[in-house]
Image 1 (cartoon, rainbow, N blue to C red):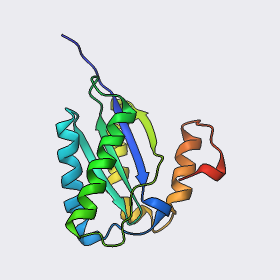
Image 2 (cartoon, rainbow, N blue to C red; image 1 turned 90 degrees about the horizontal axis):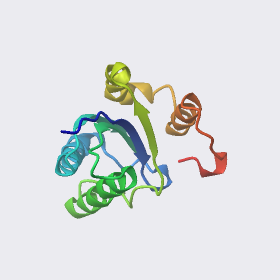
Image 3 (tube, rainbow, N blue to C red; image 1 turned 180 degrees about the vertical axis):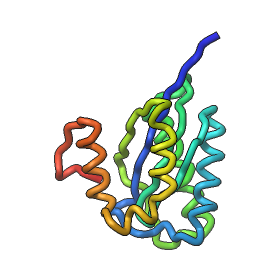
Length: 147
C-alpha cells in the first residue's frame, strides 16, 4: 500500500485577465471543475475565484503529473464554458498557472483564503496577489510574464 499527501494551491486566470467569469454562473463552473478533479482521482478541498481567475486547493493523485492535471482541468472547463453560453465573453484560459504546495498545517488557512476571494479582491488585484504569492513562496519570476 502506498500513502501520499500532496496538496496544491492552483491559480490560473482568463486570457488577458478579462473579467468573464460572471458571479451568477461561477457556482456551475466550480461544480463542473469539481467533476473533472474527481475523474482524475484527486480530491477538491476548495474552489473559488473572481471574475478573471480561479483558485483551487486539491490533492494530486500520484498517477498524474501536475502539468497534465492543470491542462486537463483547463481544456475540459474551457470547452464547457464556451458550449453552455453562460460565459459569453470568455475566450479561453491563460497559458500559464501558479502551483504552490502546502502542508496539512496550512490547509485550513488556504481553504479560508480561497473561500474569501471576492472580499480579498476588493483590496488587491489579481496581478498583485499572484506576484505576492510568488514572492512568499520564493519563486523567481520575470515581471513581463506575470499572469
